[in-house]
Image: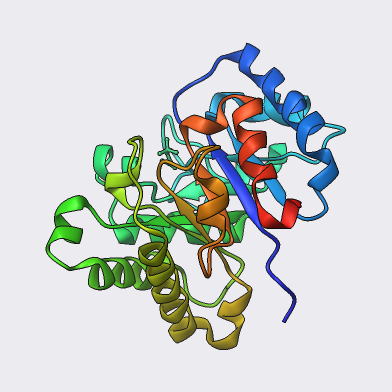
Length: 252
Ligand code: PGA
């Protein structure tokens, strides 16, 4: 089995303006030397995806999107952007099932599954997000909740996916699970993926997300089974995001 190449993905959420796109080239100058060993991905708001692709030309920074329609076919869906459209302009990845989509847009595992399937059908790699709330962790339900989300959100029959474990309570805050806790959930996610894909699941990258920054990235990357990170706030500035990427052991 080929080793999994680490993926460090930046999720800009609903932040940034056109001028922020200059961060992409700035990022490349900082991480080019390690790009053979670590994949760097930026997911700007959808309105900026094309421009980001233009801004990233000549660099190895990969561009993705933060969401796509669950409808795989062109259809009357005012305001929606399809996975095929994102692939058409050159995006390579799309985040689906982020906890903010699940919370603010009532996305269920079933919707996330359809979005991931639409992404795969369009040739995009879906980054499928799962993770427990604080109440679920306190109640000792992490394994039950996360494995159920993986089973219901990851489409059958195609292991060309990325899974991001993002504890909801760790997003946008200052606390993260401990390193053993992160490793435990990553092992659980992989075991759950093995039920579906068998040994092929060993090729799937599992990212950690939630309050990853320059200060804690290297420690988190050292956790068993962590194949990279999904980074929110700290991905907006090239210097911070580069520091995270350069903190990966594969970048040494
Ligand atoms: P954060 O966000 O890095 O700002 O905690 C992570 C995410 O929501 O993907």
